[in-house]
Length: 124
Image (cartoon, rainbow, N blue to C red; front, side, top):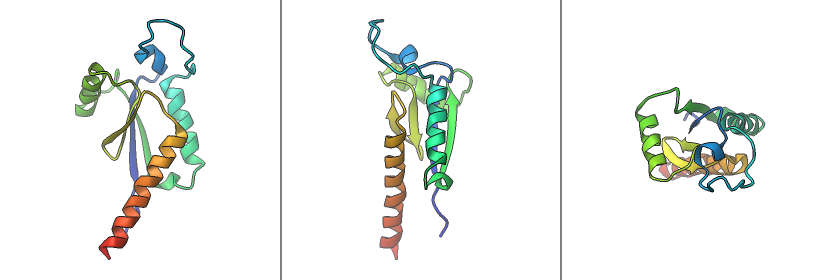
């Protein structure tokens, strides 16, 4: 049986930080890391590359200002209903919004990979 690959798709605006695109504080100067979504994505890539699951992940950034497809249109609709960028889908399922935490991502990806091992064992 071939090993499963987790498809990670991050939707955001590469050159903006999450506060610039989605902070609702009204300019109160809230303490948010001054990292762009692109920098956050690169940090996530570095964490994944250093992990034991790097060969089981496919990572992609989709800039909602430059790219256009059905998913981008859905992201725009989600933003209108209150979700914050960046939005992340794991295997096509919306999993995270408003930021990127490498630790949370790795934990969730391991859960997905572990759950599929369990399903394979149950099938035998």
